[in-house]
Image (tube, rainbow, N blue to C red; front, side, top):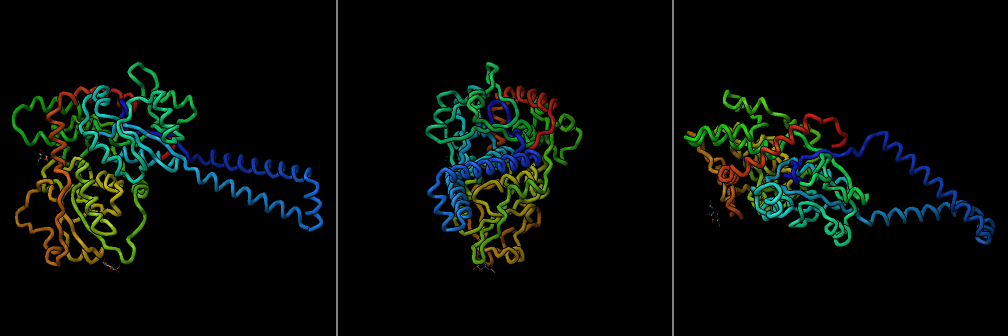
Length: 451
Ligand SMILES: *[C@@H]1O[C@H](CO)[C@@H](O)[C@H](O)[C@H]1NC(C)=O
Ligand SMILES: *[C@@H]1O[C@H](CO)[C@@H](O)[C@H](O)[C@H]1NC(C)=O
């Protein structure tokens, strides 16, 4: 989850109101006028220069040329100095809301440095994290808008750390969402940065929170284990305020659905923002890997990295919600097709995704995309083989272009669900607080400019 105390997917300030832009352009124009007039006066005082210019003819033109050259030089200098922005957070159970916040932060500068809060600090301030520091760093580092990562960042930016950011890390601005982030003593966590004039805001990404995701996970448990139904139901009430799977619309989960506050609304614009917008080079070796990529985690990221290294272009097929639930059972996947697609698209090792890939990799598909290699990880979620279903990779195997890659981590979506369940008391407490503050946020929510 993002920042301290609040989920990530936070908000922000608009950068692009047309009126503001227009005013900006006018201000620049005025400044240019002033500068040119000023240098014109200077020119007059440099009489010898001027006289010689007049004699040579076209003195004014030459002056203007020189001025222009100087201005382009200045512009270039400004370009060379990269604007470095800093954003911090816990990034526990990272989702596309976090990725979107990082995308927006990167948009406010040229280089994005991300501080990942230490396990100890999260534990002390919010309760135990679901993902370890190592896993969280893998996730944050893999986001394509992140340039550098600072590990073990403090939960609150104190004066010492802020100066370290400015001096050692050359940070120009500290970025956070437009939700208030209060420290236990009630003070604003970003007050110091604001006072220093080095603070900028981004707009919160709506539709997902870790609280919500935990609620969805608890729903899958209901089907699996017998007994202790009461505990499960109470847990569901605690966490479940935002799941929105179609197949969950049965009576027992309607409590969750009715308390849902915000829902992910996939827009074509968001998909474009997350895309690379580039196809493969003509002679590129295209690698294909498919899967559910549910609860996108460090195991996925490291396997995708290995897959990308086997070629020049990694095409990832994301199975539809129906395909996933057909093989893993109701309440799966936890994340919807579009949510899963955005998470995978945000990963720097991925070049392109198929939003809703077929279960079977056909020969036709291999031809269509000019796929050179089809890969599969060794540590995959157990998928039930449905009756009469053939090997989805048969065509690729026949063509001799199928490879199994050793998964660097033995981590699956179930691993994460299991962690939540084992530790549910602690997460329950942590989420109770969260639900309250989220509710407050939505009650006072107003439109905020930005994307
Ligand atoms: C298809 O992929 C192969 C192998 O990577 C490559 O050499 C070839 O140029 C590609 N074909 C086209 C039409 O791009
Ligand atoms: C995953 O790997 C760790 C260490 O290599 C091992 O202790 C653990 O039992 C493995 N878990 C599974 C589910 O294979």
